[in-house]
Length: 136
Image (cartoon, helix red, strand yellow):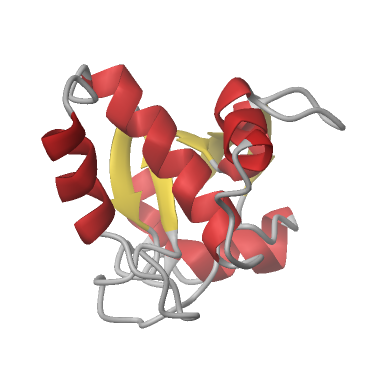
């Protein structure tokens, strides 16, 4: 299997049914994509797969073959933070290290979708994301 993760091509080996989150962490070496609830409800494992929000804990790596994956590490150049990450930091919004990547990824996806157009929509987006620390 081959994928492009954060702009870098990778050849993956192993079981095509293995969860994408495990392969991103184990084979690719990226640690911001995490196992949280393992029921697709917390969003700790959210990545972009071919431009769509995907819960990597419930996605077999085989479904990503030939695809493009973006993780929180890919939101900006190495050693830098994306505008979304900087905004969260400036506003002291991050509650814990587990929340940070998820919230940055989700904010980027929300802005890209054009749905960050009202406080109500942003509040609804926040309701869909719960960190293990209990923050929304």
